Image 1: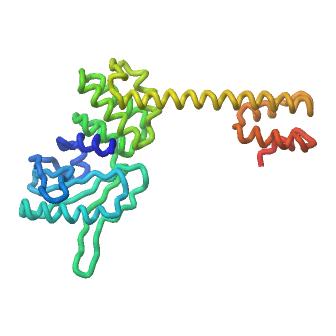
Image 2 (image 1 turned 60 degrees about the vertical axis):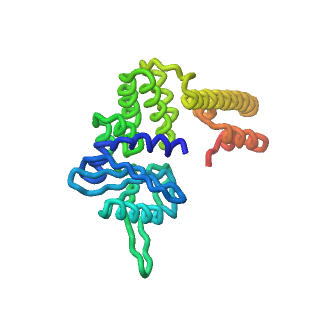
Image 3 (image 1 turned 90 degrees about the vertical axis):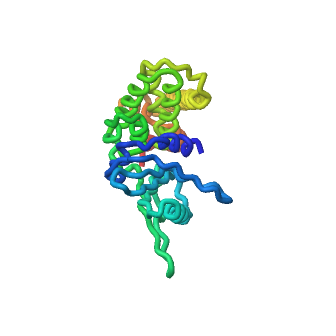
Length: 279
């Protein structure tokens, strides 16, 4: 829900560079469409393109098998309302692979539209756009350098003032969650000259507290791992004598599971090599 709300706010005005990538054109008129039915129907984006086409875009962050029926319903409503069939696309922004169907095929009905995984689009193109909405959406696209993209976005956000800066930063953090980039964003935010009180934004505070908790857990894990390696090293030295450099390096690089396995082998092994074998 958090992702959907954030994405919809980015389409309150059509992102110009994204539309260029999707349909090779620009929006001429933003159309507000809402149908008073038993269940409220509100398309994510409906615009009149500069070439006269009616364009309808839906955003989707999960694989919904019923999506073709929803798109068919919108198709009928838009045709009835404007007297013109719309060009329809679904822009998938989810983390999982795109598996949704994009067509309906029955003996008396054939309907289809275009379904696009946003990761097939070049994020670098959106980063060059003057539109902040395009820049933010670039984070979901194909990126050769995610860190560079985050740095670019933060530099752009740093130039904003007041609530606009806090709002843009919150959107950046939310979208980063769709690509598992929270650790990278937290790291870069702490290094950028952005003056913002994290405590004033409940969501940003939640993200940074999660990062602190992860850091504490990683610290405890590393501490246990180091203690286990030292203890096993002492036991090996008592059994086999001074450890050679290769054995010391292997112990230092081992995870807890390997250290536990080697500790159990020590009870019956007759040589250092037998204890520390990795296969």
